[in-house]
Image 1 (cartoon, rainbow, N blue to C red):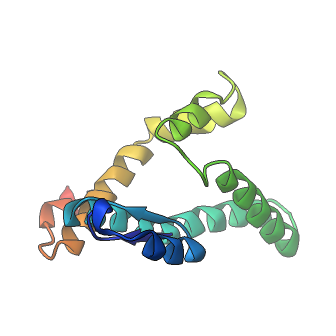
Image 2 (cartoon, one colour; image 1 turned 180 degrees about the vertical axis):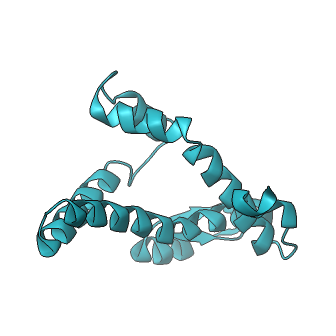
Length: 146
């Protein structure tokens, strides 16, 4: 994904088309919003770490490593396709469509109860602080904040 760090009205259609060919161009009106978008690109490693955790769980429970890797990669690719062209409500709708009391909703509830989503927001604040050139020490991981 590529973000264009210029005012939306200042970006020519040709520039947007060029970046769209590489991924998805999202023109925003100011540098502040660009830095926020840039923070999201740092979730790539987190996504891969979640995939690795799932793969490791499978292999630790007797699934062949090649099968585990292929399955996890395929499932995550399929899941993320659903949000590739997200509108303002798409992600909220995708979360809401999980069956109440079902296993997908169970993961969401347990991750929420464990503070996983609050932790993610905290990490994004930390990355944003670093991107802006003045890393805030209070944004250290919970294990260091005490």
